[in-house]
Image 1 (spheres, one colour):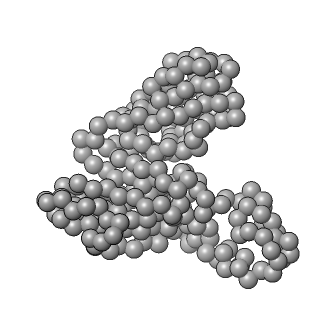
Image 2 (image 1 turned 180 degrees about the vertical axis):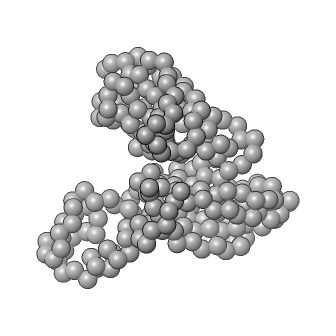
Length: 239
């Protein structure tokens, strides 16, 4: 199980940074960030010695792993909005000798991966459910070295794109029907506008932590602001 703590601010507003108001329509907007455990930040702030909170070892006091996640620099956070009758989209992805061009992608079920094989051999890619040991698998035709193909994702939920020929080629996927997604760096703003009044599902996801789903109500000619910080503090079951 993956867990999240979400600090959430819900403000109904029409101010700077909000979507333009359209007659009869509404919108949702905000800022998405990630941070480490608040207690860890406090402990590190009280330690003597020099060094960055992330990515380095301190010269004195407690020692921290040099490869610790730098939450402030994450660039693969996602926010998704569940809508109706959403047209399919394509998401570009490249396989190289060093690995995949993206570690994770959130997309709508029915979207396609435009996958380019930049390795020196053919690859047999497939998508597997990761939420259970006996999960379903979706296979694709072999992709020759240097070739590009579009692969439609028909499975939903927590998935992984893998290659039968190279275990180092892996991209974590999160798929949900009719989900319009935006990829963000930590601290970036997002917005969804021109929405009909009604109830919507808003999803925040980072592949190392999991996801949180929140129901929002959109009113005509009104913007809803939702700022979120994803962290690994006191645990909430994300599923």
